[in-house]
Length: 292
Image 1 (tube, one colour):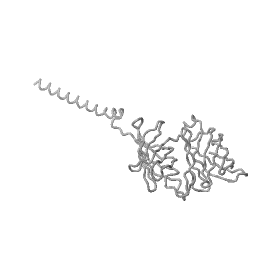
Image 2 (cartoon, one colour; image 1 turned 90 degrees about the horizontal axis):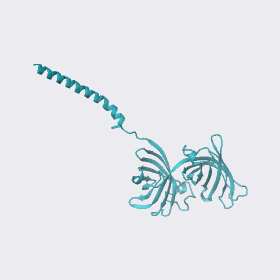
Image 3 (cartoon, one colour; image 1 turned 90 degrees about the vertical axis):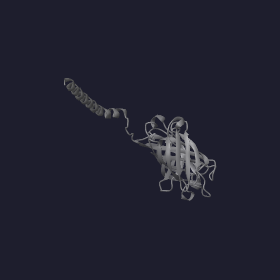
């Protein structure tokens, strides 16, 4: 009888101990899981992106065309990209229109296209696969990392046909200048312009963007070079308020273009710009002022 009672007491103690251990395990497990991150969902984040785009078409109806523009939009933490590509040559050129010279509805310039796909990975495993859809056409940009950080390059494909090559170079800062320029009185092709210059700038200083006339006319695509202090640019996506220099060509349609050069000096939370320009006719010149 005593032996039976002892076994019952031992069984009750074993069951009570087992229940206590199970309770403790259940209470500790969620805390351990939270510490280790096992089973936790990583939130998907989105960030803005901006790249300079360059391309060369070696086949198809636009063979020989050199493309310049920019790709801007957003990319999430999984690599999925949604953006718009703007260039000055993508659509079929109308008779009498030339790349980098004639802009506006008549010449179907500048062109825009919607871009979707992914850019992801690092090192040899990095890849880019983008679908570029314009008005009546679709291209695929397939490629990989291109040496410099976050730079990409590859082939322009249409179906199974290889049309050319492309590169994307990160733009690290933006430049905005409200400017006005006027030709010297002795110039033959006198011009007077007033508008806004908006440029994306790469780490090497190459710039591309738009000149938007104040009168509401169609913006034109502008290319050039902007020299800024690297240390100041690294801390902000907006051009730092430090002395800089600029050189850019502003297309004027059939009249040609003007080449502006200038430099800035810091003002009260702005950059004050001043400089000179040549064109559009040979021997023409003038001065310009700006603020941004």
